[in-house]
Amino acid sequence: MIAILLENVANLGTAVLGALAAYFWWKVAVENIPASKGLTADMTNFDWLTTPLAAQARNNKFGAAFAALGAALQVVVALLKLT
Image 1 (cartoon, rainbow, N blue to C red):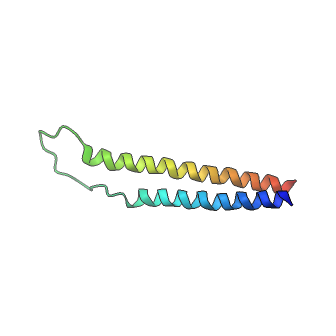
Image 2: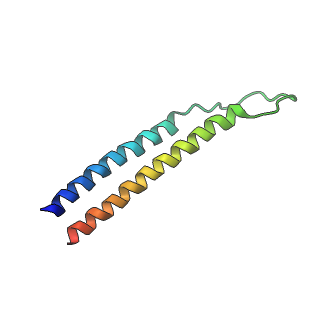
Image 3: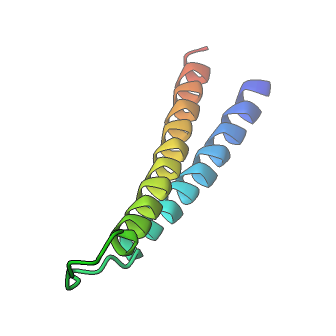
């Protein structure tokens, strides 16, 4: 009985973590990165490019972390089914 409850909680947790991963990867997909920008001789920084790329990297990190946690919970579910 307790194994079934734990399995259901782990499955619910996996669903929540999957939704969070999808949300962060959606944020990666909709991040606006300029296709080009006219370069000038006095341009000293590339914030127009590095800022959105850094946001994509951060959101990718969170998406991957939530996906990994969801996969780990599914390992727990598989082990519970073996017992």
